[in-house]
Amino acid sequence: MRISYLYLKSLLLFCALIFSTNTFAQEFGHSIKVRMKGVTEGKTCHLAHFFGYNQYIKVDSAKVIGGELAFQGKDPLKGGIYLIVLSPSKYYDFAINGKEQFIEIESDTSDFVGNVKFKGSKENDILFGYRKFLQAKSKEAESINTMAKDPASQEAGRKKMESIQKEVDTFMKDIVKNNEGTFAAKVIKGNMEPEMPTVLPKKANGRPDSTYLFNYYKNHFFDNIDLTDDRLLRSPFIHTRIERYFKDLVYQTTDSVNHDADKVLKLTKKNQEVYRFALWWVTNKYENSEIVGLDGVFIHLAENYYLKDADWLDSTQRAKFKERVDILKPLQTGLVFPTLVVSDSLGREYNPMQSKTKYTIVHFYDPDCGHCKESAPKLMEFYNANKAKVTIYNVSIAYDKKKISNFVYTYKTGPLLNLWDAKGKYYFRNNFDVYSTPTNYILDKDKRIIARRIPVEKLEDFINFYERQQIQKQAENQGK
Image (cartoon, rainbow, N blue to C red; front, side):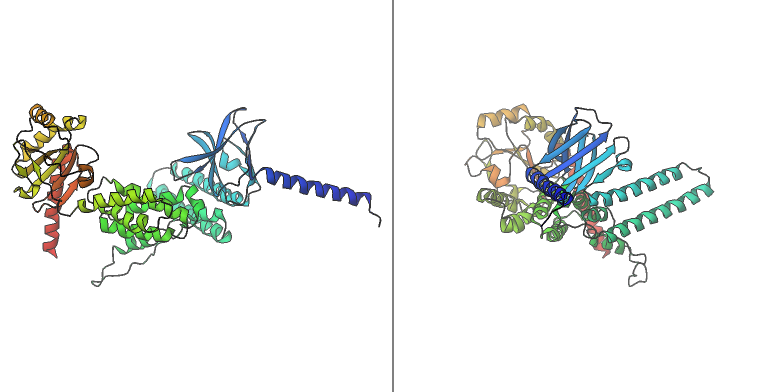
């Protein structure tokens, strides 16, 4: 059979292309090439991805050579929103869906979004088509804000702004619908707020239910973000949504936080990476919360998640969670303070249960502690102003009687009950969670814990706040 020269040449060229493509794919799992006008030749830049909305994780570095940055590696990049970092305050973001690993980017630092062009990434064509539309509409909105401020112009501007917002909303919905299944569509949808009902249901008295919109918004808050897609972890969206939810929509009591934490964790459970992040975030927020009375949140999370199904923990880590729960559980706000029998310098024993005042403060200190020495005069000032309703158990965690005596003498804490563990009954770190000093517990007349770890200088403010709360609760109960 006779083969033409042109056919043979084409065949050889085809084979060469296949060979070179396979060799390139074997050498590199990803290749992100960037040509950016305005970046100095020889400058070192970084490739990174978001983690949360306010930090990023560096993936690679490259120098500008011949006007081009080449970020290349043997492993594919995980999907997410990536950054070309020129400096800590100057960076440009783009999307990687996890499949498009060979991308070329060309733009200009003067207007990255307006001038950017992509090769090898339909995802970014979609995403930046949306961003360019938004940029154009933002410019329209800015021009409206510069219009004259007479009433007629203001009304015309308001209507125009409403029209622009409707255009943006429609555009977002259309682009998400027309590109369903793409990562870009998920990113765009993640920016959308839940669509709210325009008609409110009425209560039994015929008036509109004013709480309906809030409850509806809260119940649909996560509708537009896929909490099972770990690519969105490497973006600002999941972190921002979860943070807003707990900050703005969750009532800050233990029961409410626990209920909503369960809800969010259930939504993330199908993706182990997102689930672990959400669990870590809620735990981190509430383990040492500044809001009084939320100590039960950590216990709930530890008992129901870390100690049940956190298979990523080893036995040592799990044991630490168990130890922490065992320490904190009897010390929760609302529970009666555990038994504490300590002695004065004459060997007489005292127990906070004996206190007859409206409030009892158990103040753990260390005679060698600098913060304790600074706090002692403030503690005495608080006591002298409130001794009619407060008893202070000033408990040393040290066992040196001479140091205790010197502390009492130097800082004039004689009017307090100056006490120590004369019989060595307690390990204060485990029995009362005293891992730093000073540590305070505030007890009510029934010796229930109403607060812990309130700084000495804030004791009076807290008690005044607590009393106002009690008066308000009584008024609400009488009104029912």
